[in-house]
Every structure is written in C-alpha cells, then in structure tokens.
Length: 170
Image (cartoon, rainbow, N blue to C red; front, side, top):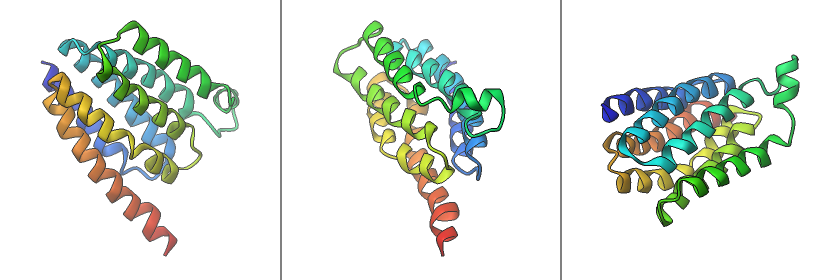
C-alpha cells in the first residue's frame, strides 16, 4: 500500500516541475507531499512523514504568495521562512531516527526557501540540491517509489529548466 501511495506522490511530483506557474507547481506539490506523508508513515519512516506534513502546510501558505488578496498578503510575510524552519526542526527532534533524519531536514530547509521564491525558475533551481538528500533517505527507509521519484525529479527539474528557463532566455 505504501508503494501505491508513493506512485501517486511520484506522479504529482514529476508533473509539478513541468508547470509554468509557481502556483501550479505548489498546488501539485501539496498533493504530492500529502501522498508522501502517508507513504512514509506506512513505512514507519516518521521523520519523512512529519516533514512532509510540514511541507504540505508550507505549500498551502506559499501558494497564495504575491496575490493581491488577504491570503496573498499573509503568505508574503517574511516570517514564514523561520516559522517553517522551526517546525521542521521540531519535527526532526520529535521523530529522530539517527543521522539519517538530518538529510530530509536539510532538504526541507532548501525547499522552504524554494517555495518562497517568486518565480517558477527559482523554485526549480533552489529545489534541485534537495533531491540527492531525499534520494539517500528514501534508499535507507526502504522506499522504492521514493528512490525512483528522486531520480526522476532531478531529470524533470533539469528538463523544466531547459524548457522554461534556459530556452526562455534565448
């Protein structure tokens, strides 16, 4: 069951990096992080599960960033970055599974800055270093779909960068 849920997370994750808009990336990542939260819980990989719960909340908050609305103004608050860093720290402290818990934690910090970024190009660029960390965590946690996902994410981000960022500049 964990791997079936992981496949849904995989699909949403890969599609997200092909989106042109930052908001669409974050909404698909909300679906993805929800799937990964369940996936890791079923595997007993609690740091990964709880960090994905924090990531889902982060996607909800930052999806409205830059909008001319009340939600957009709340999401624009610079204080969200330290709030999510503190939540991630608390999540890892509460679910500590040894040094392996540090890897997704560092990834969460990187993606916190990425989801706060103002453009899809910056989201892709800042997110890229996160994936080798999760790749190792997935392998150590026995997540086959997670390992496959991280390899494909790296490829998808690079393709998205070429399609939307590099070719756009030319």
